Length: 138
Image (tube, rainbow, N blue to C red; front, side, top):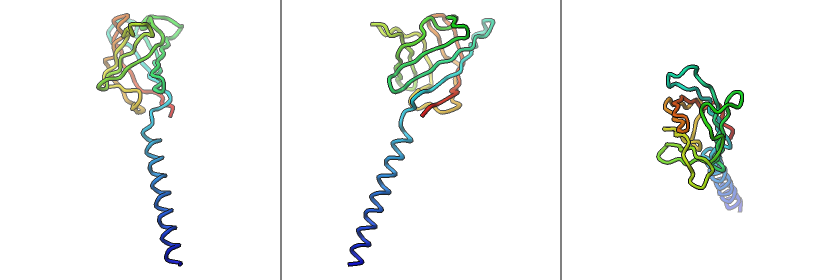
């Protein structure tokens, strides 16, 4: 009987290990709750403008804020987004889902701390900006 008990314990231990690994992998690959970008215009227009973009992958939402609540870069302050081929299109929440900005080589669901780009395009104001992933909330 001791041999059967040991086998059962080995199988139970192995099963518990596999379940733990699967749970860890799911957690490691889960989309973050929130991704914050710090941005600055780089299109040569003076003065440079600093602003923030925040993405919430759980609901494909985004919001934008500029110092002093201005609208120098974005006229639209929030909406939804879609990511295709690692390019994120930021859209208004209107019936046409009008695209208001584009970020190449950025996916909020897989972004990493320190990821960056220098060719973000704010289509409402024709401004170009660079961005850097500043904060990720798991």
